[in-house]
Image 1 (spheres, rainbow, N blue to C red):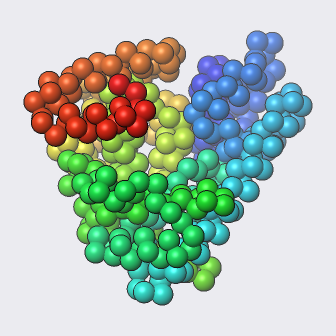
Image 2 (image 1 turned 60 degrees about the horizontal axis):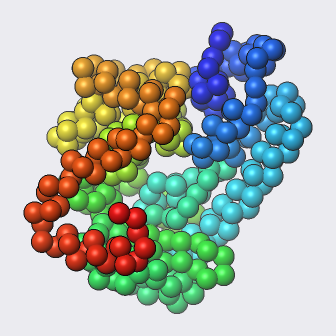
Length: 353
């Protein structure tokens, strides 16, 4: 079977249930097969460390050039080492919070550190750790982090209307925590209420600490809305394989437990129905994962699928969509008096126009 480099990388990253190694191996014998574009794609989409895990699991690592294999191995080892440190810090922080009755809900990349994750998830490249706390315990959580040596990167008032408090960073090793009072920001918060996430979360032991993990439905909904709407990926036309791989893994883990009608309804209420359906089709086309039952199609979905594919082939095109997005928001901002002092403060802090 002939795959483009992008699709070959996706199928290689996919769980064995979606793509057997026998489907991938023949491409390696083709005279025009090149590893360098695959490595560049893996780096661009932040999946180089998980790719190393899957190449090794599938017995394909020895087919790679020695220098690429060594590069991926070194990157994987660094990622695992970093994630062990983050895991240790997460347990230490959760244990401190447990002492005054707080059990944080793990969000986004923090879930990759929880027990029982597949090796691909354990090697996932992580930035900060996002944790949901009861809104009235954010101050207690921040004080506990400061007692453990963490410091705030911004003043509290700068995040007064934000869905999470200012990040806290440790000066010695750089671990960073974001404490969420809401799962998503702005209008998106109503689509995934914190109270609902708390209600449906599962309590798990994490060595000496206790944490909570969101339901399968809430994991998928958070993944989709954060990627498509909060990070504006639908408007920009750029989907990151790291986020799509998370979605694929969530479905492999518990597809039967995902309430797709609820997800469709919440996305439709936000005007994100076409983006949801286009994203699921990208995952299906790339990773070979069947669509959930009842996923509709529309002209808007077709347009977004074309946009995602075009920007994948021509990454610089996303910059044009970025400026179009900024231009669409400009009239509303010009009519908002509070926007001017905030923009001046951002420019003084060195942020781009």
